[in-house]
Length: 276
Image (cartoon, rainbow, N blue to C red; front, side, top):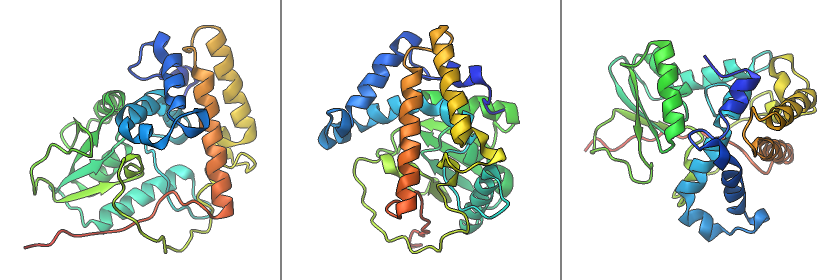
């Protein structure tokens, strides 16, 4: 089951990083960014270390606040965040024409929320590609809990250097993962019609939603102070408050970018490899 409790949240901060090394990891991650003295060239040169540190630090927070699928989804009125995410994963499976027995690759699979749902929905065998050891171990744990080890597996590798032969898979998809690539070769205009509800609503702290209480201003206040107390008591590693802070800062920036129409988190495109 998802890690939804307070101790689950703080105990997972740092992933496989030793607890005493969490604060130095936070400091190193922050220094990659321009606002903390970093530069774009260094970020690109060290993208693997930067991304691994990020997901070691934030995975438990993602799971606590978002669930097992770390991606956005178009959302309809009266639809919960979790329902919209599941519907979007079903949409992807249908667009790919996935069927029972198909072999599928999830590029940048996180802790495997999408691949488990897509496998359950379509009957396909789905392999998750991930370069973060902690996320893979958490994904394997969730697979065991769901009893789906045979249909869902993981491979640890950098998606810039995939260790697969040609024609290994019937279909490949990526959800909110290729943004971490140091060299983006695809540039498209997003021409999709917006859904009735803004995509950034779950991160708008001024929007009150009982189903997303943790994302509201009050919910954030409780989480922030809970992490503060647990870090003070030594139950959370030093640096946990700073992780909470940069996640809140990112959420506020995403929501503001959405309101101003200068940022979109996801767009869909479908491509087929030539048959001959």
